[in-house]
Image 1 (tube, rainbow, N blue to C red):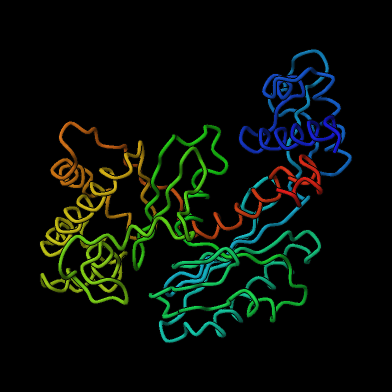
Image 2 (image 1 turned 90 degrees about the vertical axis):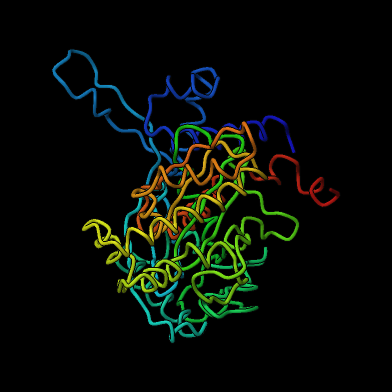
Length: 399
């Protein structure tokens, strides 16, 4: 493969990534951002415009009373593609569509009972929601794929090896979904915490730090490890199962996971069980948060226990991985806003002497975080460098 073509392809991908992270910009600004001459940058933009990937329009900040020709900005053309992310949560199904600019253009959410977690039934519901969403957005022609985020271990082929909270083991969910779709597109699957992490970092202008941890708190606790923005998956692809860290002999609730694991102390059912133990009666996390606001004693004591064990678990992660930042997300993470100091104190008691505590950030993503991240993974795949163009098919075969 010729070097000029490979270099041009790489620069086209760099241009698309710059426009994704920084939004619209002039040709001159894009040339400076990429370190290219104006003529080279303009040639790249012309090609991307011809292919329908980018569009130029009048700059918003140039529409004033100043004399002279209004400026123009180059931006990603949102209409070029559609990417659908699905989250199979515990009792909750979310479907989100992103356009080519990685903006949410549609979403659908529904709940389901715990007894309705049979893979075949959920696959049919996913397909129905996807079909409704695609039809509302003009059909399947722009769809580049569907990624399903699952609360469990997923292999590289998209097979769910285990999802204890759904009661699944060795489930090929993707063919089940495809069987219900009129035009089966590219289908992939991902762990929900990894997808949540991608939703947090994908469109940020600044690159993630050298080591960041993402903790997703829902019925259980999932995690993702990002090193320089890349997900660390471990030998078998299952790294980041922070919820399985052992922090005691027996948790606050029996779950289909390891006894005494972190998620049996800080997951959703653990919080509600502890609240009942202290005399409370919250039926869900939203109700529990409301009781916290009123100052209810049972809720306050439950929160103190939660902060202690969350701090203990985060300290174990800090001791091993030395992250610069830990991001908490998911429905149960809202508790952290009521006990930041208590979590920090628990961490300080259990980290190595003299080790600084990592920054802890509460995610601003709503309940659809993993679904958004799943769609972002598909978007990232489309914007990845084509190895065949860069190295040549014959070289890839011999590698």
